[in-house]
Image (cartoon, rainbow, N blue to C red; front, side):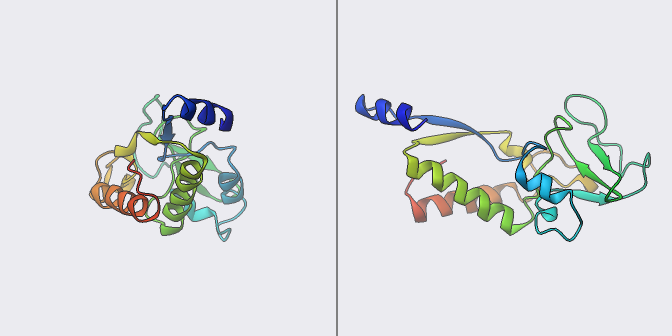
Length: 158
């Protein structure tokens, strides 16, 4: 990627990256840590609900079919996923999650990326208990915070 960015810059081209901020892989280090215990610092990086196996928190469906909730027996909790069960949703209500995301974005900007296309950005402010999965009430607040962070630290818009 660094070579691509460098070569593009030689031709006055900026690289725009597709960036998904709504969810991570279930293989991501954060989620692997989150599943270890409810007390793990990464647990609140995702959307969890207490429950009993086969008694879903609600009837929300994933975009690819099936329930939007996946049972984790070791924790006695369900995690929320709007897409694949392998893509648990990040908890944007947690300021630490947002801070980590902003640091990651800055890392890419420091590498020379010119901007980002934000995939499914309308889903970051979900409120699954209210069955709100897109365009949630805090969406503009989160996007404005993201924009302020970038202007302050890099002068790059997302």
